[in-house]
Length: 446
Image 1 (cartoon, rainbow, N blue to C red):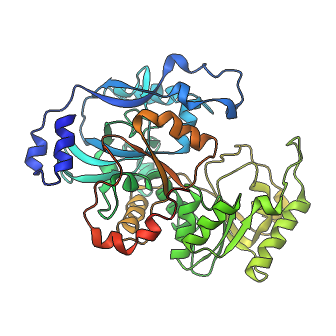
Image 2 (cartoon, one colour):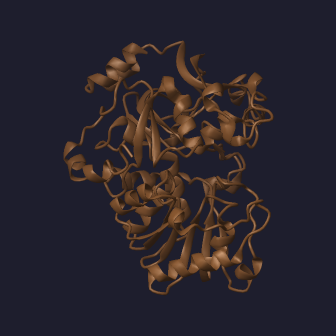
Image 3 (cartoon, one colour):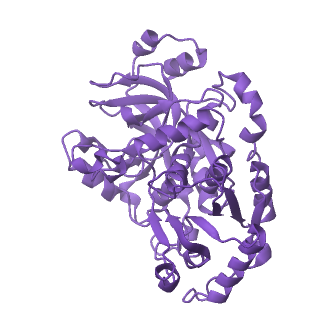
């Protein structure tokens, strides 16, 4: 690995020299173990500690198949799916790997007693399999996390509808929290060259998810002038939704949990902000068994106060159970609630009268197809959408990084250095970086 790292850091290594570098037999990776899936049995979710379940260890390099690439990973990032994997909720990911392993002789590689996790990366291609023509060793890349087979007809108008659609590093093995990752070559996209390795790795999953959920015709189909309610507007997902609303001529109404997060939303350019801790909304009773429509109404009144009497056109929903009833209530007649993730619980409850009699729509959204991912990355590369990276850990501390996200003790995205020996490396377009440095650093150190 040292030869590969030296070649990357030299920044002038020719493609043919990258291609001639020997591949390692083993590499360092963050894993969970199949024989530990019951280690947290009996504990509440909040008490499950990723530091106990995530291991950093050497694993064998997987076989490179047709249409695939091996990437030397300079940096990665933490997403909620890594947290879910590490606490084995709502199910163990080894079930995903077992099912994928039954698909073909080649996919058997993924069914292992360990799972290399992570669904983001930035790095350099070090090898490609048969049939790969677009990418060569030495290419500086980021990866989106959509893994598809596309042997069925269903996915050819929208790859997210492929029956074999999976999220790389969550429902497949050999993910990005490692020194090497195995990806399908059609996951690769050009690295934004005004960003460092850790900055470039951090948008990935959440940026593409926000693009589809809010901007794409497959999601909210946002237009200029829309009022967009964004839950967790300074978080990893909401931070990108806020940027897309502002960038697309919409008006974000940003819901945050404290003044520190409100300040981040303001730094991004948002003006209409609801601080939940100040307003004290209690959508559910203390037992969590019933919702209070009076609180929905109070929430809606606050929105109208901020918007000059207008209701919400699109709700960007991802907390789920805690907020979904309120989201449905405050959406305007004919408006749209787009939903993904459900980080506060999957069993949503809402009063259907406010949906059905007012012709509102609920649209489910899950990650993004290849085209949507490419467009989302293109906007980052052009300096129109910016990373939301707040802090970065070394790979050896990946458990702590995941714990931060699990306990919501973070802002934006938490990055992880893999091969990169320090932060701040990998920038080539210094002029573009200088023009946007304040926005690139908006979440830093918060």
